[in-house]
Length: 273
Image 1 (cartoon, one colour):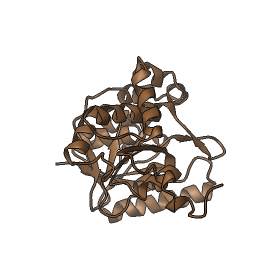
Image 2: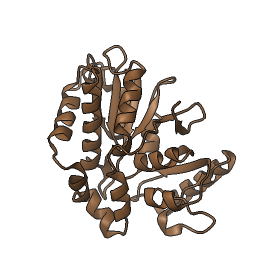
Image 3: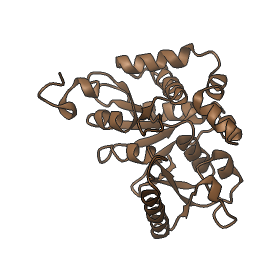
């Protein structure tokens, strides 16, 4: 029984009383956003890793919704056209599918490709899930893009700004992937990334942890070789077999990035000052 208050109003759905909370995907983000004072999205393969690479280089990244691979051709074409219009209106370059990269459009969601592409100060980065997750936060609530590359920097920023208490809770959202039917596939790499971040926050005194956050932390702490686990995971193997092994290698560069990408008033992830 869901209760008469409904999902959006139920304290248990928001993991109330804890300073660090954890959920999955767009629906989970909406549940925790009801109370969250800070929202962190984790999509190790590859959105938040790509954001970390671009922001570290000095770019601003504007997320934009793109339908999943299961969408029809017409819906996808319409969304791609809308992304192109948004990029022009925003004075930004547009990241395209890797298969459509050209000398004039060398940016994509691939972190490896972003490293090779020319610098651009503003980049529209389409994503089926993360763009929706970043949009659920209440006005004034900081939204942060975290990955294995910037765990320590993100954790320090969060605690130094007073987040991670029951009064100012942090919601850590593992983006996950999608099954062919469009349903959420909980992805190991996002669970581990979220778990390592939660562990770092807790070590700095943030908390208490919700039961969900504690379980994610345990997963991160008990995995002896996180880069190897991600490399041999479903997502890691998929990228390797489709020619994106370098993206997995970049995504598993633990703590090599000091940039903390925070969504600014312009709707772009920019390096926190």
